[in-house]
Image (cartoon, rainbow, N blue to C red; front, top):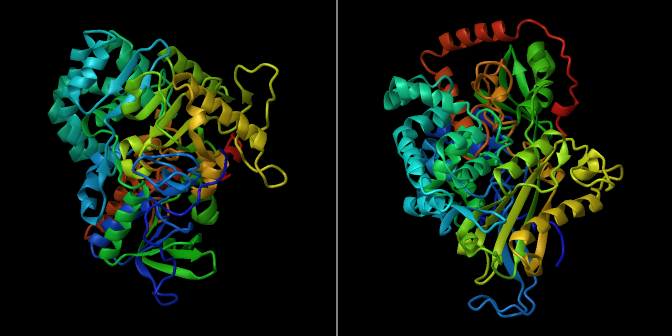
Amino acid sequence: MGTGDAAGAPAARRPWPGRSRRAAGAGADAVVIGAGVNGLVAANLLADAGWDVVVCEAQREPGGACRSSRLTAPGIGIDTGTGPPPGTDLSFTTDLFSAFHPFAAASPVLRGLALGEHGLRWRHAPTVLAHPLPDGRCAQLSTDLDETCASLADFAPADADAWQEQVALWRRVRAPLLDALLATPFPPVRAGARLLRALGAADGLRFARFGVLPVRRFAAEEFAGDGAGLLLAGCALHTDLAPEAAGSALIGWLLAMLGQDVGFPVPEGGAGNLTAALVRRLRARGGELRTGTPVAAVTVRAGRADGVRLADGSVLPARRAVIADVDAVSLYRGLVAPEHLPPRLLADLDRFHWDSATFKVNWALAGPIPWSDPRVARAGTVHLGGTMDDLTVTAAELARDLVPAQPFVVLGQMTTADPSRSPAGTESAWAYFHIPQRPRGHAGTAGARLPATAAVTGRPDGQGRPDEHDIAVLLERLERRIEAYAPGFTTLVLRRDVQSPARLESMDRVLHGGALGGGTAALHQQLVFRPVPGLGRPETPVPGLYLASMSAHPGGGVHGGPGAMAARVALGAAGPTGAARRRALAATHRMLYSTPARSSMPAGPAEPG
């Protein structure tokens, strides 16, 4: 019954003071740029080590891509039973970015912070994930292994045992694999050795092969029916990896196994309450958070990062480290002066590959979504994408810079997962799909308008306003996709809140063009290639400056890995062996970046939008 912006206030009720009691010019041991999950994780770990830490966040509230807001919708004529009487405005909590958090629930980093002691509570939907098909079949993922296996057996009886074999493998590798991926700076020598011991040489070699398989090939090798492959490929498509992309099997398998293990939980009351727990923990340890405090530059003296210059012109010194929870392009092209960086690194940034843009809508609904298949109603997360071939077509359209004709939709039923999100009898829901960063037009719409990049992505036009026509086209496509599986969906809409790619970026500058992953998840930009060819570590060529965002290894997801790794290497650099480490690192950086290189690629796509 209307389209508009969310209220913008965080779901967490605690105010976020942006003013500091620190004396003007007084420094800290570490300054953290950005109060996203990674920045707050880094700050907490440094505070645990006794460091004096200040976190500077440009937005009015912390959280980065882990924030919530409220939608207020008219309740005219709606009787929710136990909720407000008809005619009373209804309040819906929506997650603005990340919503379901399997990585957070399993991450050794976040688990080690014991956020439950600081107010974090997890809630779960009855089932984890549903992938319905137009022919009436539905693949389901549940924390109940028997329930998952029964669903997959409907596609092929043998797949129940095949899925159990994958779960058995997951249980063997879970602890060392998560430590290696999420908790240990690259290279993860000890965690890698534990992983190899868990697998043995023969299975370790086969696991390495699995790590580079496309998910389509993996599904064909391991399963007889379609169901398991749809679960895995759909999970891989949370990133920008097509079913035929190398490495998509491991990404899809990891997310699906986490769903089987810990589910896709949500923070009670909104994603912002995960952030609130991190902030409470930091403040309990003496850390300081400044919101509404944008950083204009990293200051460098005698070749070392020694603080930040704020947008108001003041300088905040950092005695030991500057931790940057910002994307790599913004850091190296915006916050650090080019004379402090190797020309070859700046040339490499011309080739930085962003992941796809995102078009997202939040809904306040008068009732539960009327799915044709009642099994879908029990799932917190729903994938609407059709068959494996349909997923391939969608990915191919994105690869051709076309807005998909039948997009792969990820939908969240938030009240189903957490009843506190909206009044009884209603539903708070959202859905998104990917579009190209620089679209050439729409797929499958011969003769239809082919809008310019600015219009289709919702970026401002010459008058500083998004093209409402093209946003309406994307909204209609999304709701039509849902209606195909849930007839009558749009009749329940009390309010819509549209987050175009441009709006996503305006709410969190790390989300360049609405990219949710901090850069592609493809193999050519992972490990030692993330964010550019180098060491795959948080250290930058500027001593004392550490990259701690999704642009760094291990990449996107709410797990705190980049922040934890940055904090740990900063602590190591300040320790007894720090001088030797710094000398070795400087020599390595000279070897990697000393040769000037002229880029053959235009800088435009990598520049902050």
